[in-house]
Every structure is written in structure tokens, then in C-alpha cells.
Picture 1 (cartoon, rainbow, N blue to C red):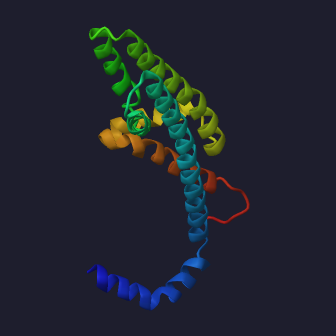
Picture 2: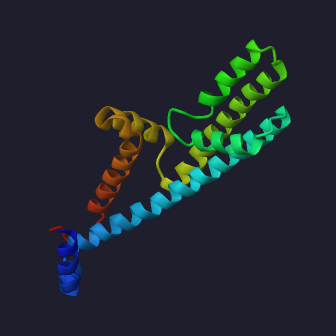
Picture 3: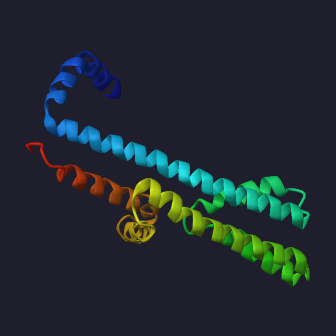
Length: 182
């Protein structure tokens, strides 16, 4: 079915494209999709910067701690930090607790300090980078995550903010003056 659909689409693509270009709703949709595409790229760039900062903090901290796998573990912790509701605390706090039980207080203090430093870095960078690039307040994104979890389940962590941005961009497009609506 997919192959037949692709062949039919290829055959009539130019005619479909001409008809769609003449429809003003299509133009509006293209503008919304272009803005969402740009916002998605901005979001990924901001997250990449934050992840890189957290990775550097973790690698340096683990190296200070004397961990022979500081680079690998630091990268893994930094990547886990990008996942909502997991973060660095899921790894570093239990690790610190185990080190306290084993009476390795210096290493435990390093793990706890790494958790505080990486959490602080994320909390300081995220509003600045995301708020500036997306034009949305961080509290609104947080609310969208919680509403998304309620509406979509676990997938709402991604779909909540995405839904917010799609609705927001559609409303902006509909409220632009000077264009006829169909």
C-alpha cells in the first residue's frame, strides 16, 4: 500500500503542489510548521549545551574522586540528566549513600556536590536558554509536562510541551492581521 501511495503521489506531485500553494490555509500551515521546526532545533541546541555542561561537571568530579571510568560514567550521567524525572540525582544520590555506608566520606561528598552542581547548572541554564530561544516561560513548560503526563501518560513528558507549542503557534498564526481566513 505504501509503495502504491508513493508512486501515485510522485505521479501527481506537481499538480498537488500547485493546488496547495494556491490555498491560503496551506500557506499558514507552512509558516506554523516552519516556526515549530525552528523551535525544535532551538530546543535541541539548548538541551545539548545543558547536557554538555553537566557532562563536563560529572567527568571532572568523578576524576577528582579517582574513578577510573570518569569519562564514561560522566557521559552516561550527563545523558541521563536530559531525561525528565531521572536526572543526575537518580545516580549520584544513591551512589553517595552507598559510599557513606562504606565510610568513604570524601567520595560521598564529591557525589553529593556533583548532584548539587549539576542540578544548579541545569536550573540556571534551562530558563535562560529555553526561555530566550522558545519565548515560553519555564513554568509554562513545567505545567505542560504535568498536563501532558495526565493526558498522555509517560509519553506526556514530550507530548505535553509539544502540544503546547503547536497550539500556541496555531493561535499566533490565526491572530495575525491582514490575511483572509477560509
